[in-house]
Length: 558
Image (tube, rainbow, N blue to C red; front, side, top):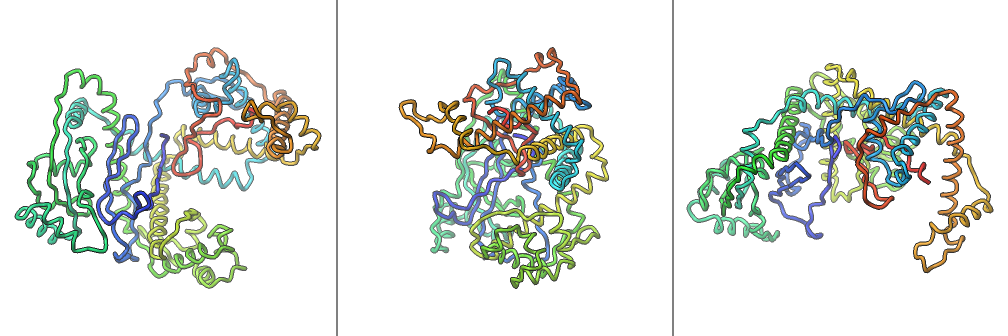
């Protein structure tokens, strides 16, 4: 998994049936990493708070780094004019690249040649000033912000984390103990204490049955408040602490965890012995698990420590005006064809709520740490995401917009911190920014030189006759040109564009000399997919639609 903030949206349903209010355990698994979080589902009768911005700390996982470190970062595998391609840049590009580009007799060399072609075209794009285009300016500004936050967390949090041998042994021991338990939660300390005492006197099951029967509108199975068997490594540390010394069958006192009062009853504990050899054999995996657990906790604390003193607040009346305009935009089909931000700034849009918001662009939306952010500032700097949900009410939308504001202000604070910490001076950050800029300039140059290409039907037909085999799905069937004409035309134009660009690139080699260091190329160890030549897994980062690193254009393989 690449560095980034990732999200999965759940609609609160199980097999299309709404899940009632209660506790949900969320388990994230990947090789070398297990994390269990808890979430409280509450109905929408709870009062919405306007005056204070809810800042998102808990799932700020900006840093799940799983790529191994390599020592050939600065080794140069090719030079293209005044640009270089390092061994590490090639390795990442190759391993994340499209498999159909690696089917030649010498896949590493052919892939490197494609990278070189893109560098040549990018160099000419710079020469023509394409790097100053509006699109690249916006992309670069957006990426720079993302990288500043990413590298800030790396410098201030990740690089300061270590795991000891004693901690690894303790983790192995924890993994051998599995708890099965029941629980109940309350938001009030007094009520939680009363229920705990009641359970201790009358039993967990009797009290739960009585509590659930008080809400006959929602049929809830008591089993929903009982866990599976979870090991000490799978449980959140605070819950493990509450369970580890609780005798089987006893009811705990009310325990305050993350804003909620919990009552526990351990149903069963399973313990397995640990072989001495397991400490050695499992050490690397548990070291990685512990590292990422510490990383998650340290990141949450770092962000919280930055945000808490700032006393972030939203102006409730202005927030309501913006939410009303957004609700209107979502529900008027003509408006939603354009972005919300564009509609707000378009004076021709005279719908009631948008018009009101337009008149309040200079009003304060948020305040933090003595700073003021207007509605106009927010809309200029932040594109509200197009989350197409069927919101049951405007109140549900308010919650979503509040989260958007939280993300915005959190990132703004982190950016300020990154700038004062001079994070932009980190060489790896500048290298990554340059690589992406090269990629965008190449794309602009490609578009500029191929957008007007066209083919006569006769040429498309000749292409079909030459490549007819690839359009046959079942070898027993035949295929007619008229049935696949549109697809054939796209393929023919793609090949024409590729050939035109290769001719240009060949000429550009006279201006931008190319050197390939084949001994370095041969020494680079890469992972090759054993799957189909069209099977690929794209790694995206930070919840954006950007790949973890630039990869060679798939079109070079046609």
